[in-house]
Image 1 (cartoon, rainbow, N blue to C red):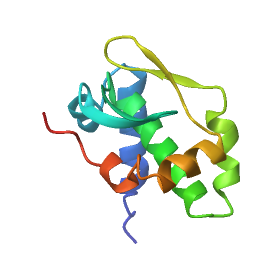
Image 2: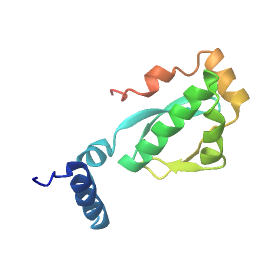
Image 3: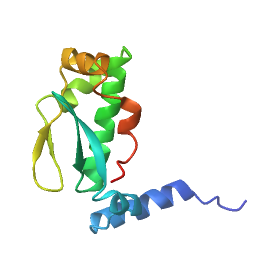
Image 4: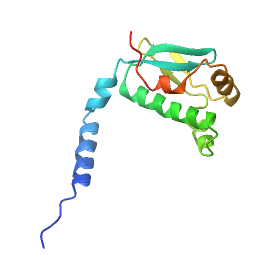
Amino acid sequence: MPHKRNYAAEYARRNARARAAGYKSYSQQRKAGETVWIIKANGKERVRISNGETRQQYASYLNYVKGVLHGLPNSKLGAERFEGKTFKDANGRIYPFITDKTILRQLYDDGRIDLEAFYVNVKK
């Protein structure tokens, strides 16, 4: 009986070797320098994200915020991942992750943040 190739395992090994060598995936390279909306305590702001890792981290944060606003039970689990943490934009400015549910709810109810718009790149 012929041996079956495990393509998923081969892909994972190849990916791990590339990351260890310092290579970035195409999606990480492509996302570097994109302008996105971020949530601030007083509303939203356009910010240029410096790399794909920061963008991925911010996308996870947006999923947490979406869970908080829609009352999903596992949204509590994400709070400690972002509590007291910050991220940098492409210009080196530091922004905190807003995790206070009262502030997030107030911004959402006032219409100062629209979660669907945050997932789309800002066009200049």
